[in-house]
Amino acid sequence: MDGLTFIASLVRSLTWPSVVVLILWYFKQPLGELLLTVSRFRYKELEIDFGKEIREVKAAAESVLPPAEGAKSRVLGMAPKAMDRTAELARIDPAAAVLVAWRPVEVAIRRAAQRHALSLATPPSRIMQALPQWGRVDGQTYEIFEELRRLRNQAAHEDGADITESEALEFSDLAVRLAAKIEEA
Image (cartoon, rainbow, N blue to C red; front, side):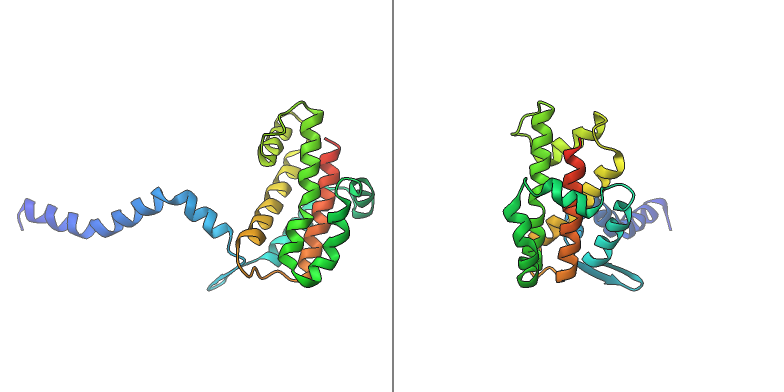
């Protein structure tokens, strides 16, 4: 085998793996976002579901967010209609309940923006990014916000998201606690 034949066979054998790597690299962000919208995924020993993730966020929130009862009383005036309807909606459509439960978080972020003279035209996620940088919320609170926001997006964008009533109520509880924490910012 001469040198040119060797190079030709090497190029031929590396073409498909190279194309696959380039496609994955080029579409890494859209593919990553797509993977985050999957409510339940199973491959061999790996399984991802909404309920498991909400329990993990709840465990992380125990030492960071205020208790549920005190949080509810502080947040009640921010989005009373949303809070009243969440439990009822969770029985009918848990995914919709998750969306409604997110409303107090966005209201709290907007109120924090007003207190810190940020533009209300700025998206809530950007406002929330600024709060840890200014020392207004801790990094763990921001991580909880990101996880809950991701779960909210999953409920919003996936048809037939596999969310139970109890999971929607857990999400609602965490959203209220997060809103109360942001109100302190």
